[in-house]
Amino acid sequence: MASTSPWEVSLILYILGSAVKWPFRNEKQTAHRDKSKWCEFHGDHGHHTDECVALRREVSHLLKQGYLKDLLTEKGKQTVSKNNDRRQPPSSPPHVKVINVISGGSDICGLTYSAAKRHARDGPNQDAVPKELRHPRDAELEAMPITFDDADLGDDRDIHHDGLVISLTVSNCLLKRVLVDNGCSANILMRGAPENMGIDERDVIRKSTVLVGFSGESKHTMGEVTLPTFAKGVNMPTKFYVIDCPSSYNVILGRPWIHSMKAVPSSFQQSLKFPTKWGVQEIKGDRRIARECYKTSLKPRKAEA
Image (cartoon, rainbow, N blue to C red):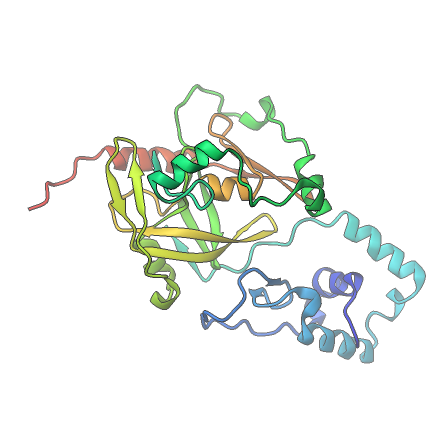
């Protein structure tokens, strides 16, 4: 087959099910795999679904076996098209593992005091893409209304000060204790997390960046690493600064990730909402884990010798 159309992909992934010979997933991590691309057939990164050679071969094989023929008619195509319009976001990648106020340098605002001062003086980023040249999909997502109401509170409506702590799929691992903090200007990955996730040290760029804390204390990072984050169908390469310090969280997601996702976090409603081509999607916070993290952060630490 020369190409794989969207309706054929939909049939393979969502209708035939057990009739499909699903490929084995390559568990070996490689730095050469393009983490910005996601294949639903393989359930892995490296290429887009509509570029998948294995999927095309499987479609051809199923056609020879007598599958799909009823759906090759115009009526069948229309039925599949309607199903695709109602299709939900693709499910999260299979998790190979579950891994149970900071400010810092920003790629846009600058990594140093002088760069930040220059950014404040010059105003908006001069290198930003002009509005008229942006992709139409961006404008469509930005125009999608995001609202919160009483229904978002659920049954637990007591007044609280809990932070927004979620679980998120990062590099095919279900990462728990992820703090969403719009007061943080960087995405932070604690040192223990990549070790537990099995991230190859070669994937971590040894580049030290200074992060500045609430009271003005500075902390040098160990390096930076770009990992795919998967949220309700949206696969986004995300740069994290790796730091070595005690923390009750595995990850702190700051404004770079929040703004890239066009997300709106609400710690009061314990909800993170963001626009997608499937409509507004939501990730709920876990107040129990948020309180455990807060309790851990207040626990006195032994003084260093």
